Image 1: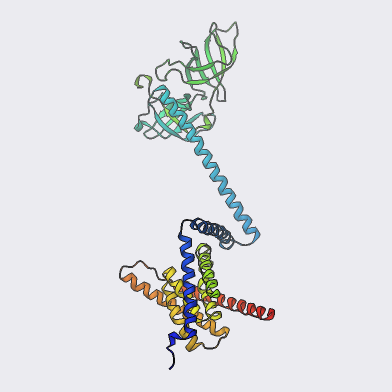
Image 2: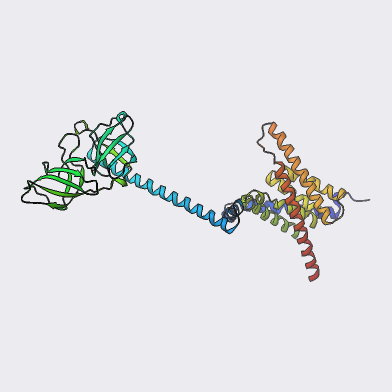
Length: 272
Length: 156
């Protein structure tokens, strides 16, 4: 009597091989799932994935662009330029953050209100003025102080438009600010711009106590500027016995070209 | 027995290489069906039961309808259509069963999506590339297996 197909040795051998195949796969799968082996399997898989991702990047670079050496060099040059641009942008943002931190620190320390603004245009050195993005609509008033950093006087508001204002820098030749030496109680003289890097302090009385290295600040005379905004440091004092007043050269503590963020202070009487 | 264990380990390694490495490559290289190619080589070298088991394992592991269709169709083609054990027969079985598998999977996928299933059928370009890859891979695998067998016979 012939045996059934499933009971032949050949069929049983095939069934045995297939069963071993599936059981082995099941064991491998099970081992890769249990706590002890899973980290090892995942490590191997993640390493393979990392390697292939890297190779994928290389392949993409090679095949997605010009494969010639000159083409690759051009690609590298483009990427280098883009990287330099990103670095410059990041540096500019960091500088701006630093500026705002200083301004916020000044506001918190002095306890004054003020309007934050950005410099949106710069004039040439001869005119000595900049344009900010706040105007009458934001409450800007002509003649008020514009500061940068930790209380450094940048200039005063010269012209006010609806949405922007022009700031006359302290270096401007028409700028005249009542000033005193830091710590003194009365006005010492007027600080003028010279269309250059240095300022000149005039109308200082012969008996005034002023010496190189002293800090010069606004005196608050006139009512538009608050007292104590830093103008600079006395560099040199010119005294002539025959002249009615002595003169001093002031070095500003800031470079107007280095700032993009300012605060426009209110009139002292309106300050909180 | 040993060959079954060996095949199972090769299957697991190939499946991991495919999912962890090949699928991350840019699209043409990323579509290289390594496990399917090895399945056809196994079908030729080890026999129909092992080949069918290979594609069944692939079908269950990946929920791959195409592999399920290949597991059913390839033995029929080998026994009824491409009966000679030549390279051309293997290429014919591979290309035809792969094409039928992909078409069948696309049909199942489309029908499933009508009933609210989340399934995107593979494009014609994808399917054509997969078939080309399978034929190239099977050709390479066939040559390798032949060379290996000749080497073993020469040593023996």
